[in-house]
Length: 282
Image (cartoon, rainbow, N blue to C red; front, side):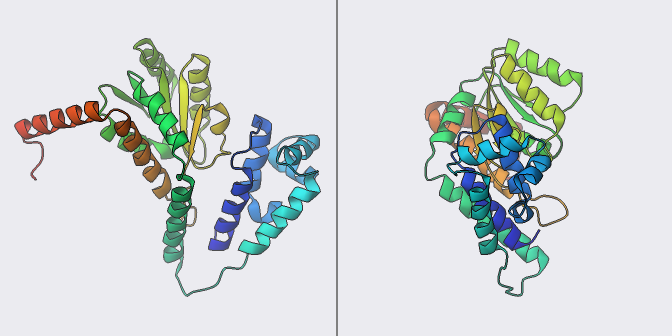
């Protein structure tokens, strides 16, 4: 995926930011973002087939965004494609382009975080949960472990859920029985089915769900109480997760800010223990 396609997808996503969409409409939006360059030239019937929905659903989706119908939305999409389709060639190689795209992702996230309402709401839900389950399957597993490692320094009971199978449901039940009231779900492409199923199960048992995912219209968003979007880089063979990692640390910072005295006490206790046990060389 070249820089122009990345910018086009970002502009298409901006069309849907803040819109109150049904699960079906989120599926349509997600398909348009994932196929931004080509979707702008498809008919309503072709978009419906791409998203796996009915053609009237595509029309209702366009109207939900404030357009009189799908043709008006398609004209807007075509204009966006025209803006981003021909980036200037500044001589960068593929690796440089991929990393520069990550810089733009971080700048986009910084702009979106001019309001911290969603982050603070998420921090409040997660900070109050004892224990705190953190879900991350497949590609999201390392990020769940990374978040869990640092969160455990300031929270008394953090449980990373990163293994599949039926025992995963058992671990969720155990966390809820121990007093958990919320769960952080880190959901990255290609959206493992077992992750989405566990999120639905968590919601059905009364847990609040904070989804840290790649887009506001990702499949995880329709099942979450709070969505924290953080785009992933797609220009290398495997995705770059710079944005999601940054968002995870922004969220943890907000959790620390919500209870500064408790955070300080826990950190001092950890440092004293680390010193006594000679855990670190420096």
